[in-house]
Image (cartoon, rainbow, N blue to C red; front, side):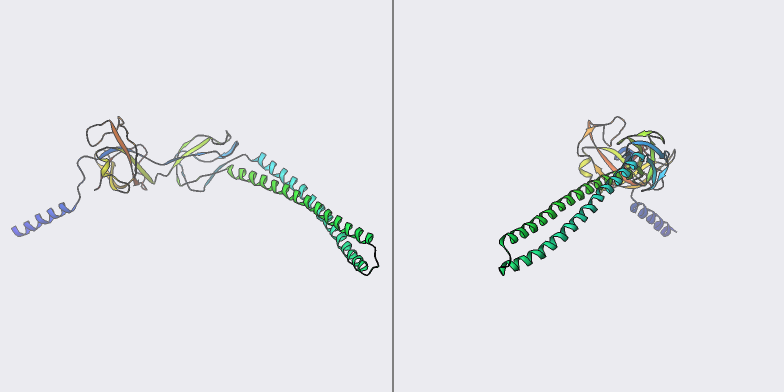
Amino acid sequence: MKIKNFWIIGLVALLMTGCPKMKEKPDAFGNFESDEITISSEANGKLLMFDLEEGQQLSEGQKIGYVDTTSLHLRKMQLIQSQKAILSHLSSINAQIKVQEQILENLIITQKRIDNLFAAGAATQQQKDDIDGQVSAAQKQITSISSQKQSVLDEAAVADRQMAEIEDQINKSIIINPIDGVVLAKYVYANEITTFGKPLYKIADLNTMKLKAFVSGAQLPNIKIGQNAVVSFDKNEKSNQNVDGIVCWIADQAEFTPKVIQTKEERVNLVYAVKIRVDNKDGKIKIGMPGELYFKQ
């Protein structure tokens, strides 16, 4: 019986030795925050639809509203008609070029005949000079008309760029949510007038939270990016819940100790901010909730 009790006591001692204990006093204290993104308008005009509410879960790429694009659409239609008118000149120019090319072809045939007659002494120098001048004039006429063609093509290209710019503005009038997250704040409502850069709503991905805590200069040398840590927060009135975290940011400059923050050592004048990233897929951690930090060595 004594041997059995000895083995039980030994087993309990072994288990207690193998299980890491939480430190009695946290290394740092802080509050939870998230990466908040403020979505702003990229267009000017009346907000015809804006379908979201605070606390709503949005998906990446979800269309939630749009700004009136009537004036943009009318400008685009005007540019389309203008481009058609410009390109109609191109057809006329192409027809003129074909006529001149046919004239040049006939003149070249005549030129060859006169050259042969001149070589045989049956044509005069005047006749040869006249046909050479006509051929040269026809070639210059084709070059002149072709330059007009390039000018028309350049005008059509300008209209293309203007339409592309308007199309881009139309696309930016559609409000598309950029990330998966929860709406934290809504700043405007449907039928209000919005302008470029005006904030529309604020969103954050609450599946991942960060505990921003402050450590003393004495603690800082033992902390590094990627270091494992344990974060503790209130589970209920009597107990805490622990989650694993990773140090993802360390401030490169010291700052004065915030009044609401306690540190491991006695309060000092300067501290360094650190952030520990933790998983929050169960949604138990809320923005602003206090937390305790324990660094793993």
